[in-house]
Amino acid sequence: MDDNQGALGDFNELIRLRPGDSTSYFTRGLVRAQLERYESAVADLDMAHRLDPRHTPTLVSRGLNRVRLRQYDLALDDYNAALRLEPDNREAHYLRGSMQQERGQYRAARADYERAVSLKPDQSSYRNQLAWLLATCPQDNIRDGAKAVEHATRACELTDWKDGNLLDTLAAALAEAGRFAEAVEYARKSEPLVTPDLRGDVRDHIELFQRGKPFRAKPVALPAPSRAVPPGRRKKRR
Image (cartoon, rainbow, N blue to C red; front, side):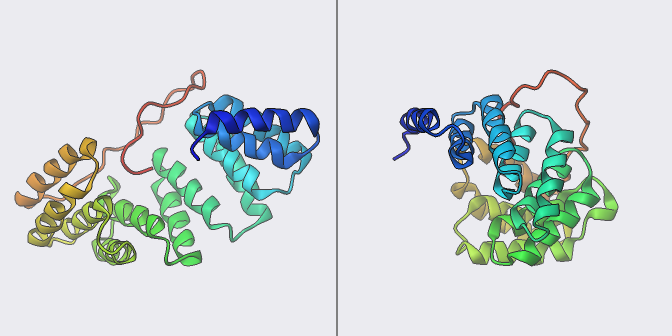
């Protein structure tokens, strides 16, 4: 019912009644994350992990919230621990890849995305993120236009060609493959389907492709260690 505040009150009472229940802490952590209370979410997930140290979703969720707090090394520890317990956990591979991409560790990101796709080939978000990396990575030896087109096309097929974000990824992949006329075509198709805050980005892509140039993501500058605070508005792709 999208009543996270009400849910939080219920979990507070449940934990008061059953303080040793790991599931209650885990789920309250998810609710707090929805409310963007990331430090509190991590605290709940810490307790859930202490009560049930082999619960893989707790580690994956704590890793995600630590990324939101820019605690990248701790997040990597969580994802690695989750994958030691469950090597074929596709979400752990995907989220670890996303974090590695955010840190500029592109080779590691590509490997994780490829593993996630191999574990769940019909997950459009996995293919989309891999395609975006292969199409736009600032590191030359990571890009692969042909494979980017393959994954982006499949992601669009899986969503009935109705997701503007995925169509824009396909456009970027086509541009990387040197197919600029098609890139312009699909970028134009994506524009009315993306959210308003992304339409300026799509128009910039169209202009680039019309000039026969592919899009390149900016190289990542790793942040200096600082007090853990939630990041600002995230880019259109995690």
